[in-house]
Image (cartoon, rainbow, N blue to C red; front, side, top):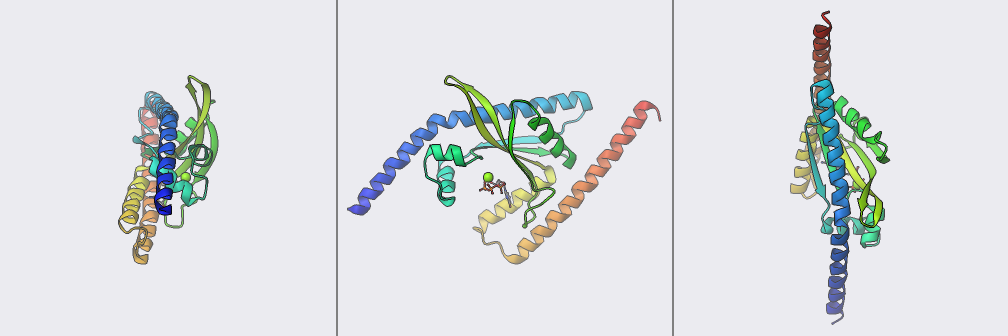
Length: 223
Ligand code: GTP
Ligand code: MG
């Protein structure tokens, strides 16, 4: 009986949380659209000025209510939408995939210097990769969203990485998911070493790109 009651209470709490979540979900989806548009505009402008795109593609996702609740529980925060808004900064997530390493920093610089973008946190896993070999530049930004109740700052997590880093992260993510977190040590070591190979390739590709750029610039100035 007690078990049935507690199940019922959990059901009510879940329903309440879902209602709250749906009622504020649009804030995060609006913030995500704003950031996506900002990125598209700066990519378009860069194309006009420099005849190439620093962004290869953009992905975005809104964290599901199950993941929000799971993460709040895991991190031992109260499980409510208010708590999610205060404690989680990745409800709205955008991934920007760039051709070259330099593009990652160019895009981050152009985005975070816009005067309606507040940089809350920057974690540079390119200069300091994670122990498993993960590389990416992570930003938490806040941007204003204009709603009927007024202006509201909403946080968005922006992950910026190269195509090669994205290739690595996708495989590693799939593998971890398939192996349910128990990836054998030899595979971990191999992934770490592939991560280093990828960083070397990224450096080489950047250098080839810069040399081609210099030749193009010389031919324009007639050198
Ligand atoms: P979360 O609790 O997952 O948000 O981690 P965190 O708050 O410590 O932030 P962190 O910057 O470490 O990671 C945020 C996100 O980056 C994750 O949700 C993944 O999308 C991505 N990420 C971080 N580490 C890894 C990794 O080792 N492998 C892969 N594939 N993705 C990672
Ligand atoms: Mg996070």
